[in-house]
Image 1: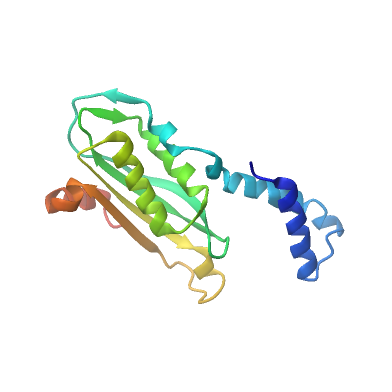
Image 2 (image 1 turned 45 degrees about the vertical axis):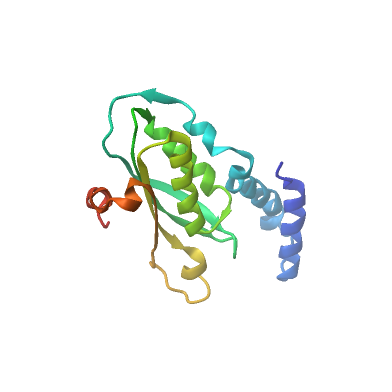
Length: 186
């Protein structure tokens, strides 16, 4: 359970540590608002993304299925700043498919945890591969990291691209090429 009262106390401490007055009218409710925001942003810690993929449908489709452009946001675990982007997931089913909205929900659950993009990309691939048991799964995540954009090197617009391949996508260059051609380089 996310302890919002404790988060609010910590935010109050941060405000004081940077020289602000947490009793100033505009800041009085800030600790509560930040606590509620963190509860939402870390809600994936309290959810199991496998539940979203537990309902499948028998379908004799055994060709590539792609869900392209799934928006996501997560918090970088190193700076607790957002990274925001899109995910592309492709899989080759073995006679069972999942509702495409369920893939979006699963990505959201995984993203709503302290993360790094590389782990998030692998977790999404592993989740689909282990839960749906397809012939293969491949994922590509593209995101801008605010820890790079607004601090440190201050390089806004820089995009990080990560990928993960399981099953046939590891061994068959044609399957991987088909996925990449259909997803494009946006």
